[in-house]
Every structure is written in C-alpha cells, then in structure tokens.
Image (cartoon, rainbow, N blue to C red; front, side, top):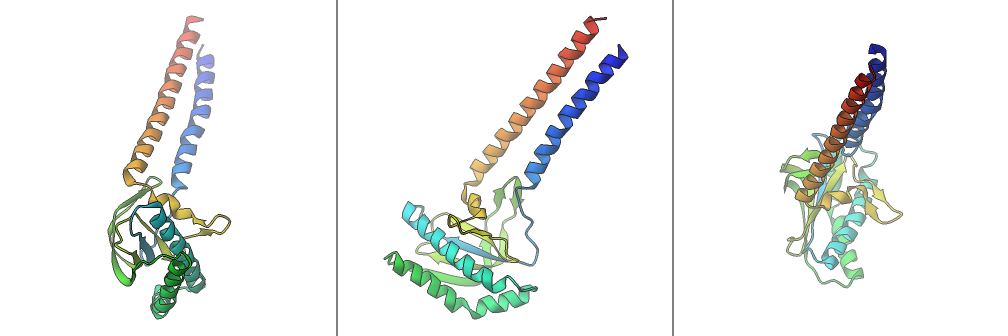
Length: 210
C-alpha cells in the first residue's frame, strides 16, 4: 500500500515541478535589466491617430538605427553622452528628412538631458518612473502614446526584416498588460488546483483498493 502511494506521489512531483519551473523561466526571460548608467531614447507622437503613430515608429527606427551604429563600440557612458551631444544636428536632419519624405508639415523638438519617464509594466517587470538621462523627441503637440528604449548600452534591437523593434510591446497600455498578467496567473492557479484535485482522487481510489 505504502509503495503504491509512494509511486503516485513521485509521479505527481515529477510531473508538477517542470510546469512550475517553465512558468518561472518564461516570466524571467521576458524583460531586460536596465543598467544604472544608461542613456534612453523617448519619442512622443503628436497624437494617437494611425498616421501620427506610424510617423513615430518611422522616426524611431531611423534614429535608433543611426545612434546604435555610433555607440555600439563605446565602453563608457561619458563617451556615448559626448558623441550624441555632438551629433544632435544629424538627428535633426533624420527627423526632417522623414517628415519631408512623407509630406508631413509638422514641428518637432529635440532635448538631450534629464527627461521625465512614467512607470512602465512590461513582461511582469516594473520599470520605475522618474528622471533619467535621455534623448527626447517630441513630434507636434506630443500628446500621443510614447515609446522608449535604452540607447546606451544598446538595448533597442531593430528587426530589419519588418522594420519594427523588440520593444514594440512596451507601447501597450499598462493596465492591459497588468490584466493579461492577472489572467495568466489565474490560469496557472486553475491548472494547479486541477492537478491537486486529481491527485487527491487518485489517492482515494488507491485506498479503496485495500
């Protein structure tokens, strides 16, 4: 009797533990740690219209791709800061060229220094809001959804096959992400409860055999 129960317990543990471990591994792989010494890029769209958001993404990709080539081989934040400051004119030209190509008559503003960032929830990780060193590009009124990533060290990896970035998911509403995380946790709890109930029923069935 004890041997039979022991076998069922062992089988349950072997089956149950990998599920828990895989969940933790998946959660931990969804976010990146931002170093204390870093320079961010933040872009504010004019509005949330599809046209303005598309313009924001286009400027984002071009500016990010250019600056990444500048700082990719640098080892210190001071070197990255000095280089970016000295080439702000080139960034302005990138934005101007993008607006001209799309025949959009829109003002924009560049700011490099201390920039206010909102708190962001992404992949189960909370990125605290506050003042961070950053390059801020404000398009028009800057009232649309914002996008940000880390320029140095480079953590904004561009996918040139489709013109998007890995950080696209950060544009989703924080509350939607939190709700999704809650739903995922609820599903995990339901699965765990089912396994425990199933295990109890098996134990009861085994006991009735003796």
